[in-house]
Amino acid sequence: MAWHSVAKTSEVTDGEVIGVEVEGTPIAIYNLDGEYFATHNVCTHAFALLSDGYVDDGKVECPLHQGIFDIRSGKAEEGPVDEDLKTFTVKVEGDELFVQL
Ligand code: FES
Image 1 (tube, rainbow, N blue to C red):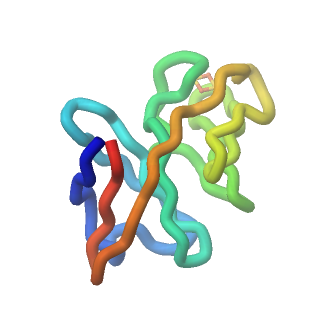
Image 2 (image 1 turned 135 degrees about the vertical axis):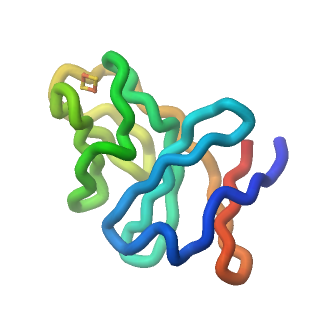
């Protein structure tokens, strides 16, 4: 496993999500009250990018069929989703975000 630089902290504002790609893997990076989290960016139900979804109260809602996942754990919580999202460890160094993959 290696750390990959994925974004500047300023690119992911509080309550937002952005999509990045690390070695061909689509990753969603979230900012929850100044803490950063990362999950796989593709919904486990069908094909939709969670970085196009809505972040609220530590959850992300899929834009396609409104499946809901817990951002910290990746747990599938509501809607048509029953498979959890893979999560990745994030670290901050200075103003840069790294994801372990
Ligand atoms: Fe995400 Fe269906 S594609 S809930």
